[in-house]
Image (cartoon, rainbow, N blue to C red):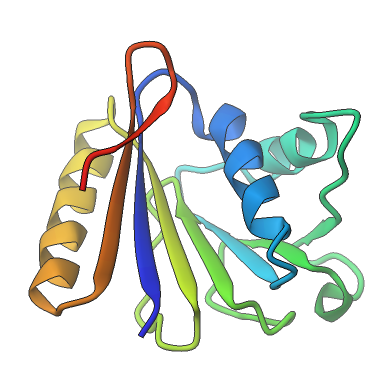
Length: 149
């Protein structure tokens, strides 16, 4: 059963916050899928992953790119898992029907978007009722992460 982490954004956009969270996950040396919902923009996230920190490197490929199975990070809007990822990020309203193949699932949502906030709360309740190991991280007024649950 995977661990589930909710990341409640309030001060930063997904494009600003995600590279920092993904860089920590990348250090585990497990492959990563970033699944983007219909409202998200793969190209914006791709740009942010390439350029967020000149001192670091997050090797990745976007859906439709060459050799996704050879890349540790894969950005997609589909449910495929060509790089046999063990970490799944769900952003911009993305969802997953089956999370059983992952070790870690991170739901990153915009707390200023009523629909995303409502969906995250529904998912939290659903997973809490199913006895998943859950963590809830929320940005404070300063932008720092606080563990709320």
